[in-house]
Length: 502
Image (cartoon, rainbow, N blue to C red; front, side):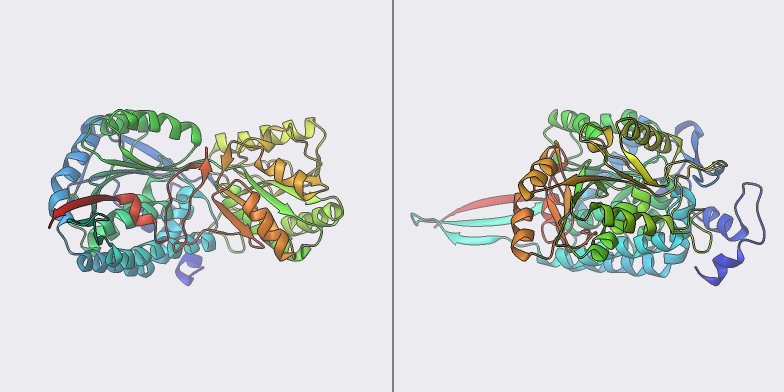
C-alpha cells in the first residue's frame, strides 16, 4: 500500500470514505461515454454503487435507458469505417499508450476497484497490471494480422485470403474482474479495428468508467469505445443485439444469462464469444508434493475471495493423503486476514453483495446437512459488510449442491477418491468445462489426466492458468471461443476470400 493510501485513514468523509478514497472516487466520470462525449442518461437517471465492506453508498452513476444504448451503438457504427482504415501500427501504438497510462495510474485504479468490488488492495493492483498486459499483448497482435495467397489446386486461378474487422461489437463485462475483463475484450477489438459499446456490471461500473478516461487520454478516436452503465442490462442490450447494426457480442458471465444472449444473437446471426460459468475440479494425487498442492489450492480457491469462474470448485484428494492435505489447507486458510480490502495486512475482502454471501451460506448448509464436516471457518461474522471466512469442508458428497453449482466464495470442499479412472469420471461429470487443476509428480500421469479431462484449460501443478498470452476459454456449457493468446484477435476478424482468374 502506498504512503498516500496509508495516510487516508485519518480523515473520514460523510460516506465513510477517507479523504484519499473520496478523491479517487470523485475524479472518475459518472456519466455515459457516447461518441467521445460524457453525457447524462436520458432523464438524468442514476443508480448507486456500494462499498461491499461497509454496505455504504460511495457513488451514483448514470443509469442508461434503451435510447441511450441506441445512441451509443449509433456512435460505434458511425466510427467503424474510419477506424477500420487505421493502420495496424496506429492501433498498436494506441494500445501501448493505454498500457502505459494504466500502469501510471495503477495505485488510484486499484484503490477504486477495491472500494467498489472489495478485493484486497494488493490483489487489485495485480489486476491492474494484468489488465494493462492485455493492451500490450494485443498491440503486438495488431501487427500480425495475416492472410494468404496460393495457386488453385487445378490451376487457372489464385486464392487471396484477407482478414477484416468484424464491425461494431457489444462487450458485456462482469463485476469480479472489472478492469481485466474489460481490457481482455477491448484490447483485441481495438487491435482488429472494431468499434464497441461496453456495458459493465452494475456492481462495479466505476472501474470501466475510469478505463474509458484512460482510453480517451490515450487517443482513442471519438465513438470507437462507448460505455453505457445501467441496472436494466437486458432492457438496454437486447435491442442492440437484435438491431442488426452490431456484428459481434462478447460476454463474460453466467451460463444461464449466456444462453439467453445466444438466443438473442441468433436473430441476426451475430458472431459470439462466450466466457461462461465453471465447476473446476482440483485433483490431488497421493504422489503430489502436498505443500505445493496446498499453495496451488490457495491460489485456485482464494483468488478474488473465490469469486472467479476459474476457482477450484470441487477438490478431489486421494484417500491416502486427504487427511494431511485437509489439515495443511485448513491451517493455511485460517491464518488469512479477513477485512476491508484497503486495510493493512488484509488478504480476504468481502463478497460483492448480500446475495453472493447468502448463496455461500445456503450451499454450506446443504453440504453439512448431507454429512460434510467443517474443518475451519463456516460462520459469517456479525457487523457490516458481506464478509465470509475462508472455510474448508471434508467429506463433501457428490450429491451436495456445491458439487454441481459454482460456489463463488471462499469455501473449499474436499472429496476423497481412490483411483485415477474414478476421479476423471467424477471431474468430467458436469455440464461445465472451463478449467481443471491436477497435482502429481508423475509426468506421464499428469499428461494422461490432462488429456482426459473435459475442459478448455488445465493447470498442471499450478493453481493459476490465466495469462494474456494464452488462449482463455472453455468447452461444453462453459463457453464458445477464446480470449487472449494469438487466437484472441481472431474472434474480432472476418476472413475474406478473393478468387482471382489468371
